Image (tube, rainbow, N blue to C red; front, side):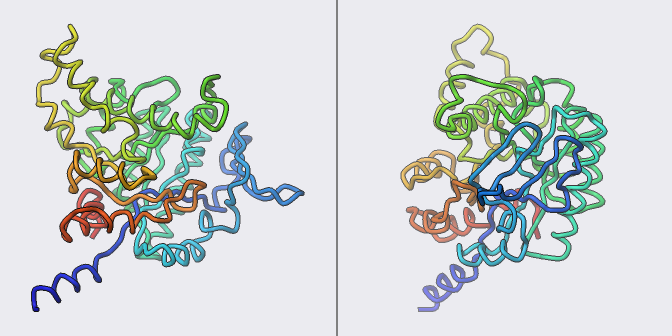
Length: 345
């Protein structure tokens, strides 16, 4: 009986921590010059958000849990979420904006997120970085981690044509290792960064599938481009269940084994480098989540809801609780892994 009561008590006291939760703050509106950003309502009542020339409609940002901390905390309670890692919205990376303007926006954003996190222990902050200039990104990462107490960086999957395997980012990865801060790789819609792909234009495919493709390509660059090899203490978290990467990692292994460039490319084992990656639960199907956990291990899967987004996973906690896992493994996915990987006390 004592053992049973202990298990029940542990389940009841498990802290649920959501690591996929963007935030848009009124205090950063208009801080990036002509690029905005701005959010509000059209005359006909349609909600909108603008970042540069990219406009997103029919997602309520103003006066919603996206931008109002009190409403966020209320909605978290409704979803069974105790704490969150709040992060920049990818539409506001501003990698193609002039460096001085983008840096001003990033610093303002990080300052406000840090202020919220200091005042609300249930919220933890991830830093935006001006990635178009790796030196400036290093400077802001160090300020965000050391001075502001932000627990991660949050970046796109490519930066104005620069892949994450570009050697110009090596100092930035070293800074992440030095600070013990993980990096979260979340793509932006390609059209929001000035790129376009006619095949992805209809039906929101740049969001539905484009994000997943871009995440898988980013993982491939980090692995095959030697980033994880050169930086063994770098932790990389990839939302949306890792995109397509976890489900097709055998293709990468096959390439390393059979393509002319493959043998000898990595100095550390594929398994060791892959273990530097973690993924979230935002995969929209119970069977897909079960596969992810079965193949990657419960220790590398973190709860992620895409909180307040159009595709918010309102069943996230229930999906994890429904997995065929031990209670301690469920507790790890629900919050323990996030605390360990993001060093949240």
